[in-house]
Each structure stands twice: as structure tokens, then as C-alpha cells.
Length: 421
Image (tube, rainbow, N blue to C red; front, side, top):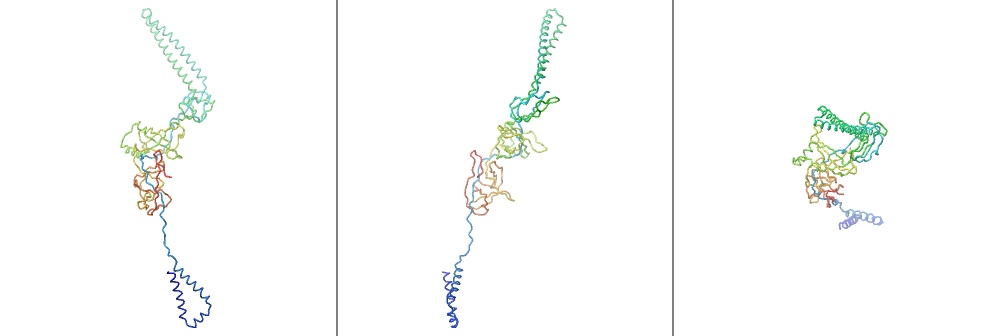
């Protein structure tokens, strides 16, 4: 209606202006071709109509963004800390030549596994076998002389009782018998030494382990002046892991244990977990094995050792590992959220939550330990029923209204929380 009235008013104004002109002007205007005036009037009327009908521009806010939210995972978590340590062989022994001779054999392949008592090296035995025979002969001779001396002693003892023999003769027989006994014992000792030296010509594995490369070649003279190192054998299963705990860590554990003192048997039941630098989490399980009885005053740390089974030899001595050490014997109820959704600014760490009015709120929190599955313990600042924003696409802005899409942070079947995908 407004557009029509505007057009009518314009036309009337033009006609009125023409009627007010003098007759002379009217005659002149009539004599002009009406086709020249009509298009001009139509264009003006159309422009006025369009100007009057244009709608007014207004800001239309975008619809609220849809964000994924979920309540924290509730689970009992044992307090722990992650330290760094190194793997250490359970046993390492240098294989040496303890007797002099030429190396006659190498009975293993460098780097191979050897069983206990398996022969690894051989040293020429000719001289040592001869020494054994010589010692055996000396022993036999000593035994023969002992038998003769004992017979003579028995005879003189009988004659002395019958007052047929003199006391001096009896004493001489007794001394010869005792000397013969000593000679037998000496010969037995020499035989033992000779047999031992013969045994040293065979170098065997003292336990199951991996033997290093040989350091001496077959045909070389070994043991000439001192013990010659031939190779090294290393026992890898089980394997030790050593690490150092600070004085503060020790005091914290004592506080968590309420100053309870654990004996050696209880300490050996405390579980430990380790992971290599390229492994997720802590896949290797073991137990505490040793705690040093004193603190190192120079470093302010105490040496701790764990024992781990290593049947596949995935761990070798010298590896740098992460060690998960429990700080107490019990677990406490905790709230867990994905570590990736935790933000941080100059004021500290925070989470984005959605309140009952579907408005994003910045919630200040404190953080605890990070679990192997990507979830982090939130000791304070978060409530069990808080709707935590799980989306990380930037759609959730503090103060903005959103459309929450409720999801659940998944938990692994073994009871360990798993990070949401």
C-alpha cells in the first residue's frame, strides 16, 4: 500500500504542475510528442516505488555450535610417579683362561645363547693330563708306604705289650706310620690340584646367557702371566632396572604409608612397571627388588632396583627406561579426563565445561598424574557431574551458548580408562 500511494502522489504532483502552467506553456507541451514524456515519468515512478519497497537490513546471529561433552571418568587410581632408570644385567661374568696353554677350540658362535655348563673354549690338555697321572701315581705310592708303616706299627705295638720290643723301636714305627699318613694326604692334595688345573682347560658357561664375541683366537697362548679374558657372558632373564629416587620422593612415600616400615618380603611384592622410549605406556611388569639402606649425600638420592622377567630378551642392559613407581599401597577415588582437552594460560590450567544453561564456562583445575592411556587425574576444581567439553575444534568459546552432544569417555575392558577417539 505504501508503494502504491507513493506512485499516485508522484503522478498527481506532475499533473498539478502542468495545470498551473500558462495556456501558452500547455499548448507547447501538448504539441510535444507524448511518447517523449511518458518514458521519463514511468522511470521516475518506478524508482520511487523500488526505493519505498526495499526491506530493512538486520543482523541474524548464527545458530549455537554443537560440541561434544561428557562427565569425568570415576575410577580408583593408585598414586604413582614416573622416574627414569636403566636396565642392568642380572649377572655378567668374564670368561678367563686360568691356566697356561694354547687355545685349541672355540665351541660357540659369537653372540649366541649358551646353557649352563656348556663348553665355550678349550685349552690344550696334554701337560695337565700328565700332571694328573703323576699325582695319581704319587698317591698310590704314598698309600703303599702307609700300608707298610701301619703294619709295622701294629707289629711293634704287639711286641711292646709282650715286652719283646723296646719302646724306642715302637716310637719309630709310630712316627713312620704318621708320616706315611701325611704323605698320603699330601698326594691327595696334589691330585686335586692337578685335576682342578685340568678342569680349567675347559671354559664353560656358569649360567644360561648370551656370550659376547671372542677376544682371543684359536692357537694363541693364554694364561701365560695372568688370567686371559676370552669373552663375556651376560644373563638377560631376569633383568634388573635401577633408578634413583629423590629425598622428597622417599619422604612422600613414607607419608603415604603413614610411616609404616616394610620388610624385605613386603618390598619384593611392590609392583613396578617400565616402558622403553618408543613404547606406549608401561608394558613390562616386575617387582621391587632392592632399596639402598642409605641416602647418597652428594646427590640427595637413594638407589632403588627392580626385577623384571625378560623371556624374549626385549630388554637388554643399558636401555634407558621410564619407571612407574607407586607412591602408596592403596588406591583413591579419582576423576579422570582426556589430557588433550586441558588448556593452560597465565592463570593456570583449566577445562571448558557447559553449565545448565548450555553456556561454555572456563573451569580452573589442578592436575595430577597422567595415565598411560592419555587420561589425567584431576584432584580439584572439577565435579563428578560437570559436562566437560571434549571437542577441540575451537567451537566452544567461554560465554558462548552451545548445543551439547553428550558422549561417554570409554573405559577399557580390563578396567583401565582409555582415551576417547
